[in-house]
Length: 317
Image (cartoon, rainbow, N blue to C red; front, side, top):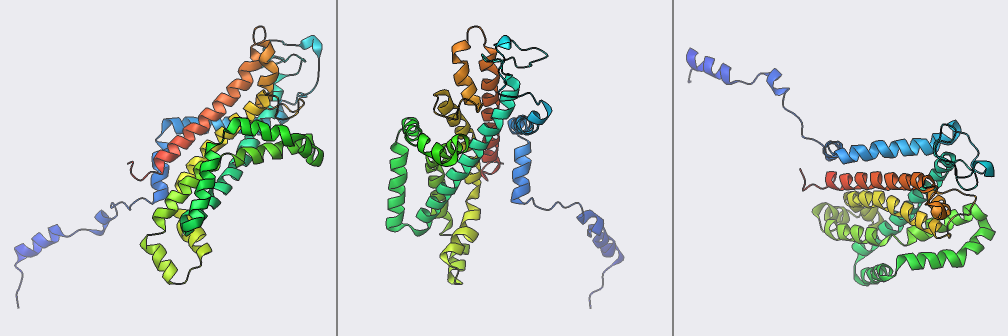
């Protein structure tokens, strides 16, 4: 039996690792923590979050604090410049622009969110079915996607709004009816890029080993789609969702600018620009403030979307 010399025992004790030293070994980051670390290091993303949070809180809480009537007409105060009494000035009817910007922001942001929901739902459903089943269903759905991509969006959008706005107003009322119509039309014309992203992800993930194992264990197609595959392709969908919100806000503003959006008594940001186009020379504040609201909202959302894309990309460290 071999025996250790005292010198060998002392050397082994020096080489041994104490329990205290092992506590400094850091655990590997989870994908969520790693994405958040990369996201918060992006200064543009932080700027976008702060600006968007300020805008959302302003349009939600502002009308309760700054409770000036949005439709009160006073021709004696027409086109007043910004002052302490009216921080954003007044329009051609003497209505307070700050009150109308705060109220109209609710509608513009709501249109963006609900239109995004329609586009993401349609795009995810069509892309998932196309990528999972393949074959003739894939060919049919992708040709439909190509057809929708080839259509001129703005003329088609204007045509649909012009044809159906009176009918939807008679059914659901002037404000709710136009809101539903605009949300459906904008969402229905922006799902194609999402469908392509989801289809590409499904074509890759469905061939992986864990999906094959789940299929061998008897998992149903619906479970494979929604439980096993979709969570692994959701990151590009999140990026597309943020960017589609800004697209919907700009589209709604364009419709309102052409006079095909909400009724005149509903002050959306785009409608305010439409009403101010004839007063640019002597009342530029009527354009500056709603235009700045649209600009900052879209810019902040785009910053957040770009940062999400970089944070969720595993190829970027």
